[in-house]
Structures are given as C-alpha cells and as structure tokens.
Length: 112
Image 1: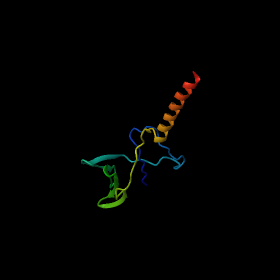
Image 2: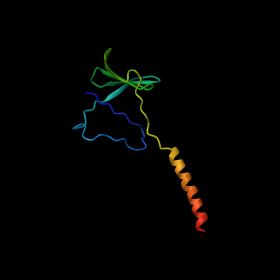
Image 3: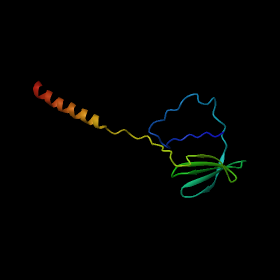
Image 4: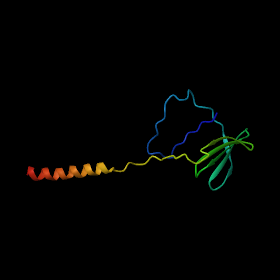
C-alpha cells in the first residue's frame, strides 16, 4: 500500500484534511538515502527490494523494484501544486476603500 501526502514545509495555515478517510494510520517503513544528485533523491527501504525516486523539477515520484517500474506519480509533469500565499488587496477592495474615504471627506465638510 502506498499513501502520498503533499504539503508545504512551513504553510501559512494548515490545509483542510478530510476526517475519517483512514480508520488508522497506515504502517510506515524506515528508509535510507541510497543516491542523490542535483534534482533528485533515491530512497531505499530497509529489508526490501523497493526503491523510491523523487525528482524535484518537475515533481515526480517513482517506485521501482529492480528494473521494473511499479508506480509513477506525475510521469508527464502536469501536476501543479500551488503554494498558499498571503492575500493581496483586490481591485474591488481598493475601489471600495477609495469611495469610503471620499465619502468621509464629503460628510466632514457638511457636518462642521
């Protein structure tokens, strides 16, 4: 069984996770780094013939046994993972703020 969960290292706020998807956490298997180069890392699972190869750009994960590819995540490089960003003021908010300030100035002229 393979379960993949992707998230930012330091997110602005926690992402929503659907509750009760799994009855219990799946068992984990320790691994060691068996190879590394500029854009990828290769992990070997202890007491197993399986290898996990993670490539950074574009993001891709391959699980192999020997020379046989068992599973490939994002083999065509089409997965786009958008990072959570701070919200910028939208155009309508800027217009609304400008109108409120202008109205406040007009009111202050007549209230004196």
